[in-house]
Structure formats: C-alpha cells, structure tokens
Length: 55
Image (cartoon, rainbow, N blue to C red):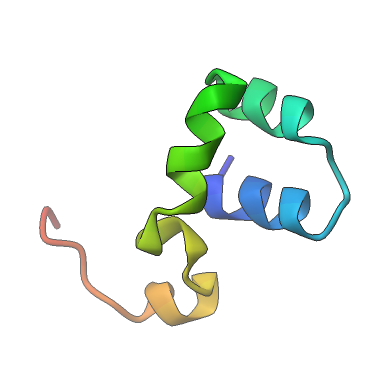
C-alpha cells in the first residue's frame, strides 16, 4: 500500500496513529519522522507526473 495514502488516512482521522504505524510496519515513534517527510506529505496527484530518479 502507498505510504502517502496511509498517512493521508491517518491525517484525516480514518485510522489511529497505532494503526498507521502497524500498516506501515514501523514503530509509533518513527511516525514523527514520516510526518516531516516532504515526499510523503505531498499530494499524490502532484507526484504522479514527476519522474523518479531511478526509473
């Protein structure tokens, strides 16, 4: 599952921080770092048009 979608669901209140961390397979303490990641906070529609460096 796309990390951005999981984080978006958390931010919208559909899932708890514990559920979000469990889906992503990380510790709830690591959630703080993910919340500050600009790539994960960007709009998925915007990122679709961008090319990946790796491919």
